[in-house]
Figure 1: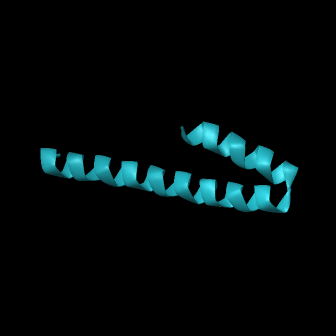
Figure 2: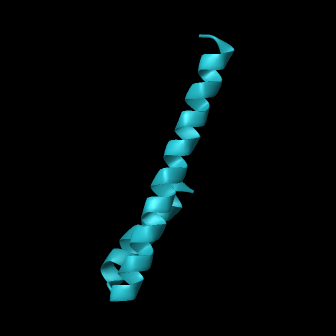
Figure 3: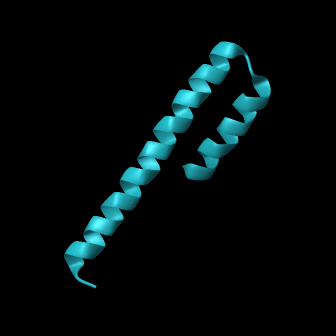
Length: 51
């Protein structure tokens, strides 16, 4: 595989990971605003998984 394609794939993978983390952070803010402790714990676990 060419170096350009490998770099592009790596960049896309990193961007995807960042988008997932942003989405989880947003969902966590909402869960905290609603006081949903079960969802907060679940989302915090997801954040640790993606870190």
